[in-house]
Image (cartoon, rainbow, N blue to C red; front, side, top):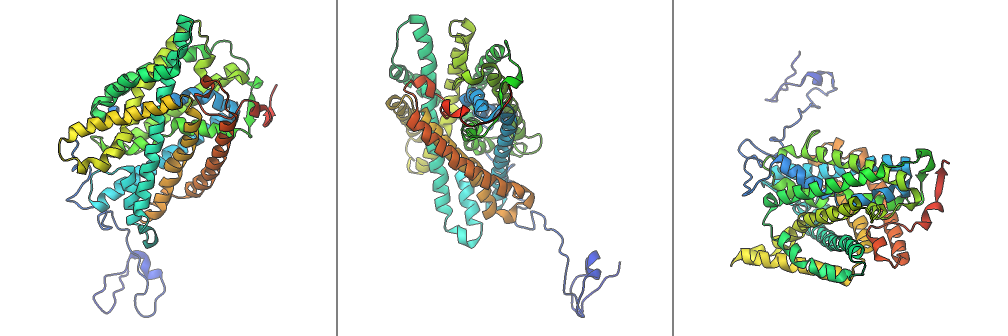
Length: 485
């Protein structure tokens, strides 16, 4: 190799530099790619993962358990009717696409967090703190919006998960209400049942941290697994041919995405789970906790949605458990198991709300902070129960909030963080998916919100039919674009 040296003390040219034009001296230089240390993202003395100090860190398996429980919520029972709204073939591809986008956006959020750990020399950050730091470290024009970004994330997360806790309370009460009416032959007030759940919900909210909440999540997974297992048994009986179902339905696709996103999206628990991990670097990667969890969730969602719609067709109910014969004891067991699984899941959903409020007031509670923390837990649970009692058919409203808030928080906002923080992320993380996700899911959010507003004005009077959000059934056949018979 020929080394070209300038008259001064300039370093020798790179290998390809001798082929570049120049005017007497060296005008162009090929700069080697800087490592993360040279970029100031970290140094040999600071590693956010080894310096992280958690009093009760969770293992990879415990974190995977929490992630599965957060994603496998009650919304999975609405996948059959979601497939009815999309068509049996379209539902498969749309579920895979939705899961891929949700996982990618969660990956981007955690990746931004890991980069910011080095940049800010912090060992853990919440979703809102990542948003604030990304805006602060981004271009000058967006730095002034850092407080607004943080507040928007906190407000959206609290609103979404607090409402979800109220919906979970209603769903537990509705399942027991159906069983009590069947066993006793007399009607019982759903508001009375919701009120009776106050003490059990307070007890599960008093679980101190995610470490001790892991066994509860495992129990919830077992109950949900048993309930789904019995449900799958019913779904595989007397299946009609696939040709008897709609392949593609365009007019009600917004309702499909609304149900799927509301059920599958777990952006609010991604960073709390990562922050409590013993080995947070294992959260990402091709075989990381996030990929493993979402792969299993996607498979279960597709299978239940496909079989449920194939089995019941146009008679598919808003919750697949409503299609099960109530006079048979296995179907009754499903309702009990699902109700207990939702109850156990309440603690994980509540943890997000608690962290948001507690982080805002803990610095002011220097005297007896533990007492204040448990009083706060009690007050929040009571407020969620009061909201559920006030509106025991709250699910349509929560479907609207879920379709809107989860889409913005979980799909659109992580990509906006990439724009503000793109100088620390590779373009492969924000390439074609950036524009596709933003445009496509912005349109999906608006159309879903429109569909859910229409549903609110046409919601049936029977509360049992409003447990999961959807467009009215009469809306389906009107927009079928392809049907095989």
